[in-house]
Image (cartoon, rainbow, N blue to C red; front, side, top):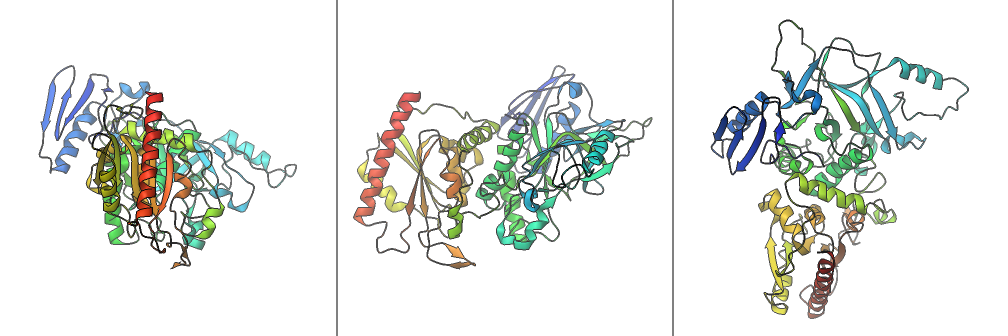
Length: 526
């Protein structure tokens, strides 16, 4: 798990420095810093966000901790500046890069399946461009591989020639614009000379494109999940993500930057959920917004480089999203012909635990068997499909006693991130409508149940309704092997209604059965 050391409310662990061990206690908006020389007490107005961020950044920068801890070689070193509020250190030396890629299929669309790990990935904050510096040995290898004795389809996992990756998850509705997702750093012949700034060694530079971050489901499953998968597959899980969101010009359809209202929604949703990835909102920027501020100027050395490099970098998440490259999320009939997430249950569970621990919650806490089991309704969770679930709530209250169940019916967006995750992690049954709002269900504990109400006539073809079921995100949810998932129709296209006695009776019996299994699981695993 990446260290939990974000600036805003996530800093609950110590950050070691040369002169002190800084411990941050968070009580509302009061921050207390202790070190070996003195005590700093910062009491601020909760509404004065800018003042809080500036004060915290100033204190943390003084003691080498802005944006997170550093590894042994930098722990006793004063930073020379910040990139997006994360410390960087000037290196007056040459640098060369290396690459390792996986996913090659020897076809023209291989870029959609390829993921690459970079050693010394560099970003020019002035040019807003990424660079790799090809070593002499790598160039020699490339020349050798281009000889006629090798098959023309030969590729090397360590060659930089002609490579591209998908910078983000792919939306098939982009059609020909999908090819705009092809991306790779500019490859420069030879090592870089003249100095550069370097991120701490416990960071991994992760440039990416967001599919549609205004929707929590897309944000977590199409952005965060593939980024986590990328880190795991290259043994970078112990590193802290340094995320930079790429924006195409013009922006791709239905992404954050196409319309002003989308920009506002993304600006609200992304910071709220970033702590799940152990990323402080104060360190998150787009490519165009990324900045470098030099703070430790030595007049004896010329430090005018605009290049920031990271020992660790990775990109290529096209096939790693929850829906892959050949379908969407369950709107079209053809979406059900492909199962993309089979066998990924363990990855999903680890991803759940990773996110919970990043916000300071115990991912493996035992369920309290002495208390009534919690049933949580996520009300009005998805646009067009959101429900009050009042008839289901009334039915449960009539059938079960208060000593058996505790019912929570809440609109998740009104809760803090921590409140949402904690509530789901303590629930035995979580009931929601299909769509982005169902994402909270991923935090259910092992042995619990997720009820997903879907639009039984919501299917689309060519943007028009065709009366088929739309079990959105079925591929991901049906492969969460640590919980049981049930799909229930909204009965929008049938003669039955959810309030009919037969439907209510079936719902009650399903809940009763799942509570029995939950009690058995909890008893056997506590």
